[in-house]
Image 1 (tube, rainbow, N blue to C red):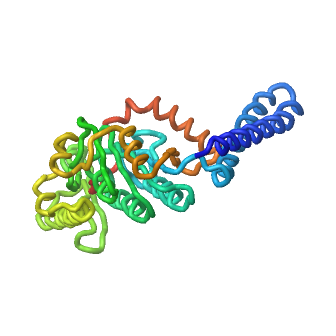
Image 2 (image 1 turned 90 degrees about the horizontal axis):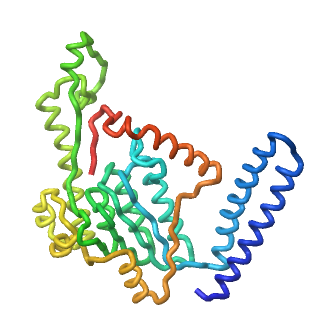
Length: 330
């Protein structure tokens, strides 16, 4: 990227933000008095942030300041973000948002490669696969790197990337599937509560925690797990060019990055800086832009409120899981 383009982009952004600040101050502060001034100042800030976001997107095409896009998959992988009914983080993007980021990077004419940060223990089956498919659609080289953990659904995603990098102390693997349920029949008996449900279909109630699991129901649920596991093995074997029997032989174990590299589960050992240097060797000068979910200023305000609520309530909810049904996880 030339210095002229960078300077032009900076000047245009500065002018846009300054103009928005002046206009907003006049409309929302100078023309009101008393307590309304507080609201006016807040509106000024929102207007400036919105202008900065819009101007940045408009200028990306005219003054491109990057040629590599980066997306992050962090925390539990779920459909709509937040780690489930009780969030692991109020700002964790869900699979739909991550796939949108990847598709947006693919459509961006200045993006030559995709960098995928993986720090996840895994998560839901289909959301993990949606991210993998989005990576496969990307037209260009895709390099993934893991910081702390690339396990289960995270490794499912990594199998679609051209390369996977890890730290020597990263935790990698867990190529397996699990299902879980709890049984509350004794609790209901103790409380003197009877459970009754009307269903159609022999296995409609399989996995419900308020009934004992029959042998055929257990075999049925285990069959679902086995089916997902077979798919997981095939995807990893194809994507990583590994023998399916070797993949099965890992028995869902996790490995430190150094051992994972020896086994062929990881391509290279190194940090994000090392990955960027490799990209520069392949593409020349590289500037990385972190793609984030498309959110307006009101969403940012809601995210701040969620962060406060999350910080306040995390200690109470850390050990609670609100999903009482049979659950499948990679």
